[in-house]
Length: 294
Image (tube, rainbow, N blue to C red):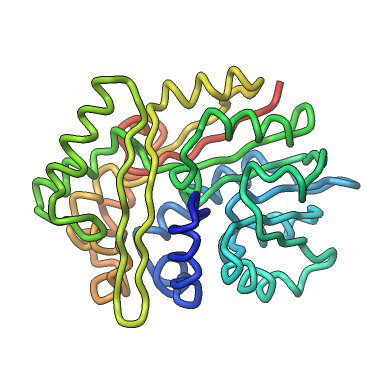
């Protein structure tokens, strides 16, 4: 994930050393998201040809950067958090060519110059950490070669998980004023046709994370992409049914006491989720998509 402000950058620096153990290594909530991202990646990112290049926006600790490197791409990963970049550098040192890693954000012009890429990804809900989705769409288009592929994911403004949290009274990762901060303010944003902003909080012994998030309508995101010359080719969703399981909602906040392994109910709901994802992506908690530059 890629912080959008100095405050959130410091938060990710603070949590960098435990980030993988909280959200990648054994977390059933994010496992499902990663599987869906991988499905889109394998379906739309071709094996690298000569001089094929890739850009990973908000590379974090390097999960998706490694995916590109494994396919033979000359890869650049960027993230504003120096500590996340250092961890990514350790993960990617085994690849030849070794990915380049820079402390930079999606709008960095000086460091990246006019470099263009065969493929770009913005995964791990990095998009929600960026306040200006319109500008991001144009920035991606400027970086993509003609016919290039853009793979993205984001937390959904209209995700059913918001309702599930209210019904189950499970507000892990958010403030106790969930009704005011999330439900009412979200409704106001939708009513006025503007982006919704709130904060996500994760804390535990020795670490703390509090970052601002931005949510846009899917229709607005499609319009931004189209205006930048990018056509959406595929959309999929994750967490439709299984977000009604309190275990999954707590896992989304990195609470590992309940997410060391999937229980039978979670596994069953996850199975149905995978079947419903494409059809019901508009209400899924997380959306994964693919766009191609015209």
